[in-house]
Image (cartoon, rainbow, N blue to C red; front, side, top):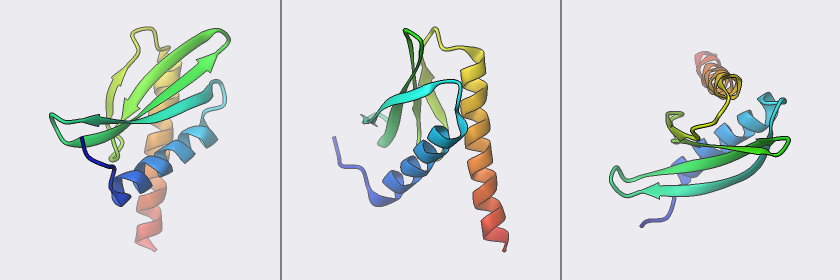
Length: 97
């Protein structure tokens, strides 16, 4: 296992900020870094809840979704995907200036 590097941490923090800002139907209650030694990537696992239900998802520093809970609602996946796309689009638009 290795430590998370600065670039990975910055990217994962940007993703987390976007998820916290853009997803309003669910609460982000936990996040943790998860190292995948097979591909040498640190993912961040997020736990969302609504009511008594909890849903988990792991996202890479480049915004790829690694895995999700079996019971995760489709609308949460859509909200997460839209937040990732919006964040990446904002980065691209800032770069064009």
